[in-house]
Image (cartoon, rainbow, N blue to C red; front, side):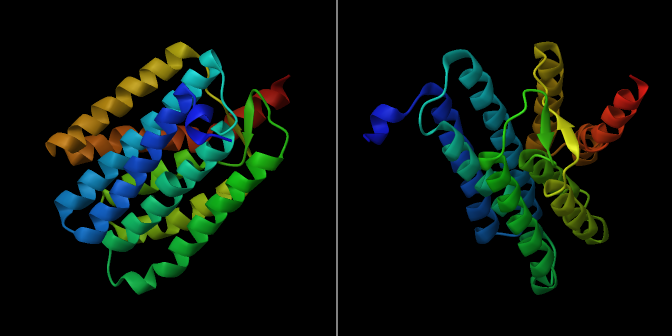
Length: 223
């Protein structure tokens, strides 16, 4: 297979996703300053936008033979390795955080492997998607409280390997609203003008999604 010939438009967004996630890792490796941490969070947020765009484009133009596997590899870097490395770099002493970071990354890999081999549903994910977990973990770092971030890391790891149903958001109106909110939060992080404001916006979106299985369960029982 000629890889360059096999690439499709959605794969370009996936490659951007990979690049941004690895750039976040390199940034934290070079410096653990507050500015570097904030910029790394911003890169992970933009990677999440790229991840959403590759799915959007794939549904309209079709995906190539590399699509699904390349997407999983990208997600493991940008929303598994990068957020875990971000937490290790942001809080010290880092060795105390290693076990939680390893568990988070392992559960993310297991979640992606299960997704690749299981039957796909048009409406629901089985277990928390790793992009949502990576975003939640990265945003928590902005608050600067390891007593919150470390337990959250373990909770997100368990949710990823759970069988809880999480909705696939396909409605264009909802996606547009969510995209604008994420862009607004990313802009606040970039300007470093109101980090708490950005954390509240992203945190509210993440919490709403984390609680969505409860809503789904209630709706199913009401039928």
